[in-house]
Amino acid sequence: MCVSLARQVSDPGGGLEGIRQAIDLKIAALRAHKSQMNDWDPEPRIREWSAQSAKGKEMAYAESFRVITLESDEDWEERKGKVG
Image 1 (cartoon, helix red, strand yellow):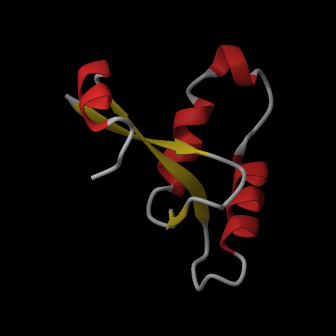
Image 2 (cartoon, helix red, strand yellow; image 1 turned 180 degrees about the vertical axis):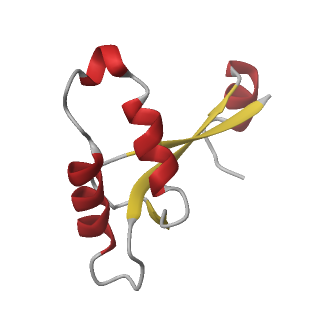
């Protein structure tokens, strides 16, 4: 079995995805974690970080990510670490 995960990272060395359509949902989800957010409103900071990631990329807001592919030990051994 092979599983791929996308993990948000601060270094845009992987990929960059526009999140203009999802940023409001992301902020709402963070606000829903009241026990972790307390009185802090994440909206200004999230918009700032996302706008900074998108700067010069023809998008309003973006997140950088890196794709990590996991596979079974058996598959890894069969391929001897070779991709493809």
